Length: 161
Image (cartoon, rainbow, N blue to C red; front, side, top):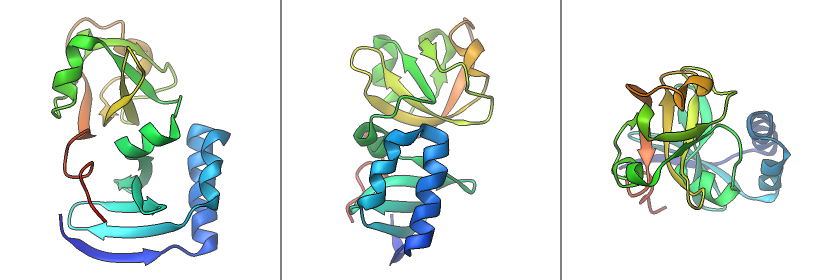
């Protein structure tokens, strides 16, 4: 990935961004407000670096935590839990099939971004786009439920800034 630009965010832009993330994930994320925020534009992604780490990225104009961001912030909303058998496929970038889903946040709507976590420790493995509502993901026994966007070990995960 090639870095095109890197600029520090102004205080009002940072506050607006934190407010948007709090509305999505609750007050637990407001602790980020004390950190240094930078906007990094690469040839593939627009990222928000928090304390020098790629914690948030932009997908189709919407901000969402990266896999690293989801791990460090220990988010509890917009989660989809996959079983042990799916972990090795998800962590290589595979889309998530309904039979591999153990549980899903019922608030998830089709088309929204979600965090895919493994069932044993609840650690984030990937970020994806829901192809069905959260209430039907775990109940469905066939078909693709989530399109993977970024995952542990990909270019975004390994980005050095």
